[in-house]
Image 1 (cartoon, helix red, strand yellow):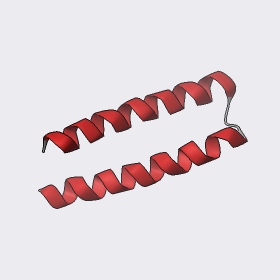
Image 2: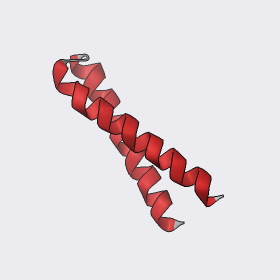
Image 3: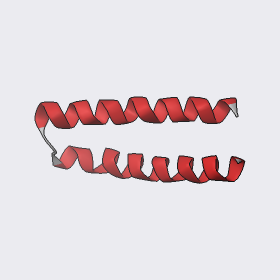
Image 4: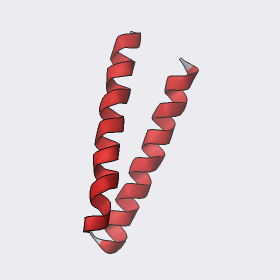
Length: 53
């Protein structure tokens, strides 16, 4: 369970950094790949959290 907590914390830090980047320079083409990675990572994390319960 500790691994999932760390993965969740990392996810929130990455989302915060992504939001700061969008706020500071707007949504550019350079952010397409990080956006897709965050969506996939969030879906996988959600799936793992549901299966643990």
